[in-house]
Image (cartoon, rainbow, N blue to C red; front, side):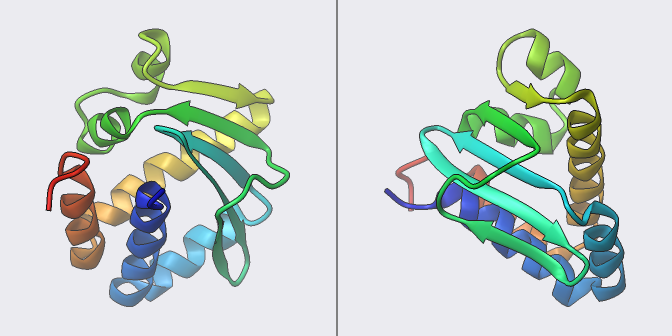
Length: 136
């Protein structure tokens, strides 16, 4: 299985680091200690933050929040076609965790999308991720 979602997130964050290093450092420092487990169209990956940066794991690790969704729902969310609350209400995304952890996840998501819009490298990664699965 390809790690399509993991590659998108990791490369986007690395693009933000290249294009906006100060913003990246502030973002990671603010999110330090947060660990999120994702199941995106059957791809299981974990993302964590510390004061030095982010780290992607291709296995499930201990997490504060868990997200279960699809590739298409991630695209819709990042494009702004739907907000996180609506996506949960219409069951496009399922979130699990404490209220505090889910609040931090929501903040991280909003900030990630905001930084992605300001980073040409991250925008390129999102363009690639939007391609239908199986297209070249």
